[in-house]
Amino acid sequence: MVVGLLQMHLAIREARSLKDKRQVVKSLRDRIRHEFNVSVSEVDALDLRQTAVLGVAFVTNEAAFADKVLAKVVAFARRTPGAELVRYETEIL
Image (tube, rainbow, N blue to C red):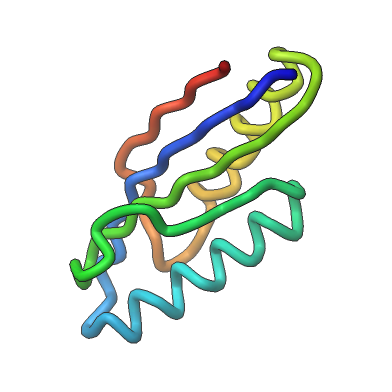
């Protein structure tokens, strides 16, 4: 069993309130889940208006496949309007 982990730090510059931030985060989280069949959750910076940290987990039987899926999630997040991917870390266990 191989577990792929991804942590993405996002800047949500247009958010004027936590409600604005949560709308962007919820939309991105739901689209990632639907598109890639991975687990996604907001894991840090919950009370910061213009910052979000999403954690993504993926279980498979091949490390190369896990890396490929997580790379696609990163590319998807980069194209997301309203959120700028500041940095990310991946880990394959």
